[in-house]
Amino acid sequence: MPDHEIILEMKNVSKSFPGVKALDDVSFTLKKGTVHSLLGENGAGKSTLMKCAFGLYDADEGEIILDGEHVKFSSALEGLKHGISMIHQELNPVPRRSLAENIWIGRVPAKRVLGLPFVDHKKMYDDTQKLFDDLHMTHINPRTHAMAVSASIIQLCDIARSVSYGAKIIIMDEPTSSLTATETQLLFDIIRRLTAQGVGIIYISHKIDEILQISDEVTIMRDGKNVGTWDANELTEAMIVSNMVGREMTNWFPEKDNVPGDILLEVNNFTSAYDNSFKDCSFTVRKGEIFGIGGLVGAQRTELVEAVFGDRSIKSGEVFINGKKASIKHARDAIRSGMGLVTEERRATGIFPGLPVLDNVVVASLPYYTNAMGFLKLKNMRADSEEYVEAMRIRTPSLKTLMRNLSGGNQQKVIISRWLMNKPDILILDEPTRGIDVGAKYEIYKIMLDLAKQGKAIIMISSELPELIAMSDRILVMCEGQASGILEGEDMVETKIMELASRVGGMSA
Image (cartoon, rainbow, N blue to C red; front, side, top):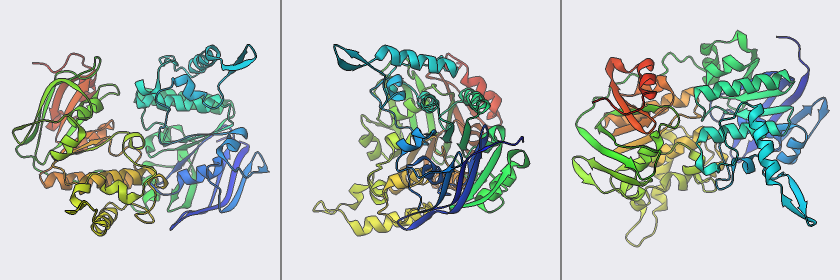
């Protein structure tokens, strides 16, 4: 790799939170015009280190040197003013405002009319369209409300907003977590253009294939420490994993030994109440089965399972559980019927960020912990929650820790624990390992298999084809709101999944 000027240097940075040392004497260097990737398990300290660089956190110890000068930012705004921009792991748009307004929030262009300041909407939309054109994002309409687009579009707009600051350093925290393969390549093209202009990119991801494809250098962290830094072309996938988890991983997926039984859930002719959504979808899930749902982004997979759970309105359709028709009009009806749903976007629809871990774990099980007088049995709640925190290996100082202070992967484990505590017969997992490191993924796979062996029915939506194939007993593939086909056995291969994912018109008779 050619020599590059150092643009950012972090020396001996440490940061502690109540009960945990998140960073322990970590050093990190970014060179101008390069991509330096950060890897590590959830809770390894990657995001914390970058938040110290950006100004969101104040490091307890250490130095930060930007363009040869020592800096100490008291806020993220200061970091932005000094040319550091950060794309955060969790999407958090203003849903009822346009994409353009989300991009320019806090710095909207203004004009004066009769001496009074007004937002210059024309300039804002024109500037946004030019930004989208420059980034080859011409398929996105800047006037569309954020609530009306997919998570992948929000992710791309976050990237566009970061670029719009004209930053010399862009930190990307799990930037492809909601992107399709095509959109990921679009992002890589954007990154290559930015580095050619001298911008330094810090890239945080659990997707090792992406890391090896896009990086110049790679730093691996574990337990708040820097394990080492390598040129990307020196690394293999096996080397990365062993350094991340501190051990060799010979198997990516546990051996499946569940045996599906009788039909537990039957979904008949589900059609959305809204146009351009799912229509006439039917499937069955058996006891002890992991039933996968695949398809491209926009195939309406999430919308379908949320409707089954009572979170979306339908025009027609029936649900049968153990052969009996179930009336599920709301999510509470689904919960009473023995269902649980781990949603796709944990920040928007999964966690209560301002509440402690305890409350987030027990929120779906409160009836079990209410005595005859209506008071909560706090001692029982704490004891059971502790068991799940230990079993799921959730890294948290205590049950009192606020959810917002946990890493994304640990937040996901809390949500899964919430539903396990509720003892569902049917568990729906929508992208259950998104933003989860390889070690934690294996743990979640084991939990899924254990539940299946207990006779539970598991429905898993996944955009990761190896995961979908390895973990599923059967796979329903969707395309543009319709069921294209169901695969099982030797037919569960990537080529057949992608063929069905592109087949418009529903299943063949």
